[in-house]
Length: 265
Length: 357
Image (cartoon, rainbow over all chains, first blue to last red):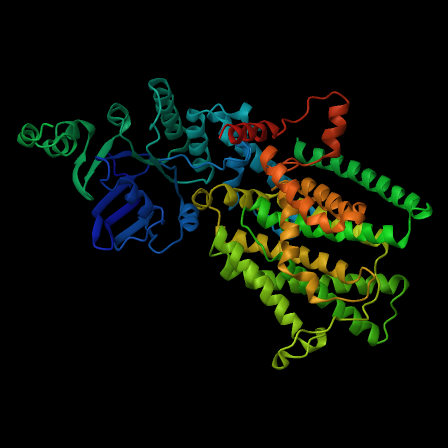
């Protein structure tokens, strides 16, 4: 296997909330184009890892690097500008804005016109608006949402809301995409669509993806590597096949064998 | 292809035609027997209330950050511009004809810039809070501004040491030429419209809908919040400047109590949070209504309150919701083109939900 470029690197990331150690010694090396799954029982600290990586929480220990640049201490929007975008476990769209505006809002940082040109509607204002519009439509058609562009986001069905959220994340022109339980609440058809959608993104954008997911069949199907968290600690990491056979992982999910016998209730 | 630009140019042409019709109507009004000073006064009032309410709609409606102290910025604009024109007149600058317009324009600009500066100063600490807390802190700042003005000697106060309420500021020249004020109002509304129909507008609407998601979409929320607040304060300053020169010749701080703020907030809510069209309609209607109901003027607030209750019960999104009037779309609609998908369905849906609840 050829040497791959590491895009996102986390070294010994950890965070304390008061006396509680939510995540401890989290390490990650995400290569270009790679898809790594992050799994673990509820409350294991998966979303906390996402929040640290995206700057929502400032890690109390450890360092985070994107293409060699340290991201510690940066604000959320700066980290997005650097190239890490995310979706949320409970969908967060701009509900009262149209589908098109949802995507275009994510172009805000790339649109260069200032206040003067906005108010005068001159000097390239329309070119920039036009190109933002075209790019937004391209992204939306990738997800089959182009016909819904004038709908308010809140009126979309659940599966399409998920897709729109991913489209918005892609619009930030990221290198790393963090997906927080994208298949949550989806029926098997929608999950299958999501799978196609993720494969499509990987082909088209060559992004690296870190995926939190409880749907094991999905995780096993698409992830190249999996990291398993439990109580904030990394208990296993490896290929899907290795993880599926790992005793500690099975114990974390289902409980220890003898423990299980004792605690039938 | 540049479809957006073409549409916009068509719209602009049409809007200029619309403005021409409006001015023609003004001309007819001026010639008719209707044009008493009283009626002209109402027209001027409509104008500054329109500027004020549309400007307030930017933070309250588009950005969802409730400001209750906006008359503070109006006061800053009013007093600053009044002092500017007074100083210029005293310095012997002619105040009739063209130089008068220039002087007024300068005063408006200075007043608005000063109000914008105050907006900037207030918003940096205030916008750390949101919701009820923001409402309270802006209300507080509005009152602070008012009380400070009350105690500035050149603004009619007696100095802080005296600890007494000030006198009104008198001797302000009349700059209430109908055409000029209507023109200024149109320019202000057009600028605010341009502002909300741009990346700025998208950013502040995104902040209204979900601040966390906005950050995650790469929007520097602090920057856009402060910017929107400052822009809004700037235009509130313009409204104040027009108010100061409306022809009564005096300014007093009791014109800028938080009760006034509340009135403007009501107009924003009634018109529709996030619709400049709605703000204009409610500003005009609620400026004329009390005059039309002169005989029962003391029941005005009762009518306001009643209107609000009815509105919240039957149409909680306000008169226009987030809909904007567009001559182009209207004409296309009349000519049988398929209109652009209106945003009304969501509004209706929200209504249904709230009625079920």
